[in-house]
Length: 145
Image (tube, rainbow, N blue to C red; front, side):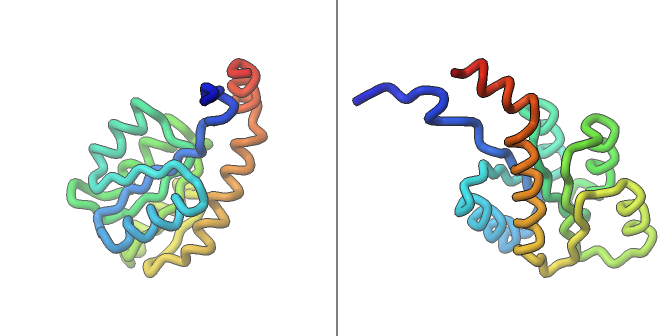
């Protein structure tokens, strides 16, 4: 059997899902893996932030109402540390003040629950296509070859 080369296993586009509702995160994980995305699910802000800080992310799907706080806090941190990172807010929150704060932080997409999976998938596909064409991705590919 021939050894796999790095071009046989290019880095997959990494989607981080921050969601505490098992029905929602299992559905998202199943859908995104079907489309061959690397998906990691976190049920708390702290776990998501630590992993994003350590390992990065290419797209974040973020709920606002989580056990350890409000997702707006993570969105603010992401906008300060990775301002161009695509973030989709998926929420059942109806508080106008919270939603106004979210809109001011300019997420890529704001979806109310139940989630329109096709709109979310379209946003992820657009971000993934941009990632594939990015100079950083091209440099990584060149170094691997």
